[in-house]
Length: 195
Image (cartoon, rainbow, N blue to C red; front, top):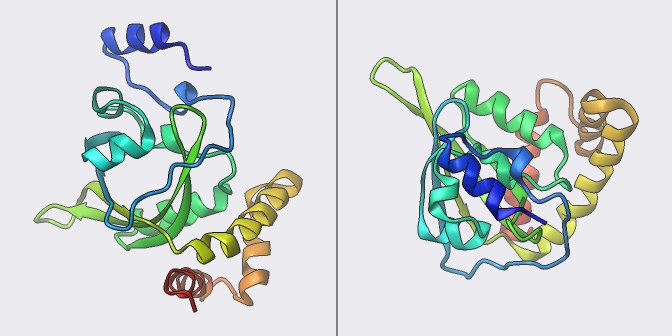
């Protein structure tokens, strides 16, 4: 249970919300995006939210006031394997794009799935000045197929950390260090297309 008074006090003192402020008790209440919903958010280079649209506010369940300035990891669901976010950050910090299925945590402890596209924002000199994320409703069958994969990766992380989940991901994709990202994105695109 989130203590609203504590959040309000933290925000009034000028502090930012983070993963530490996310609900600790999760539940199985799912918020399902509508077919035409399109979530947009922007962050600074450290992942602090600088913009969020109305659909993001509705899906996440946090107010716009709470989200602006918060670290994007406030919506990170504990069912998501860390390797997915390592791949995400490695790509976007290398000025590349990330695509993936992401289970997000709502303020009420529920969740919502998205098909995410995240890209770095560059200035005229090619420096990263932030990141923009677009999310839409994922293919339901794709979610059904990726969920057990994420569960396996999480179990691997519990056994041997992120290194073990990375090795498992390569094995699941029949990939090596050189083509694991390519194969990961192919899997994601195929699942979103329903292939």
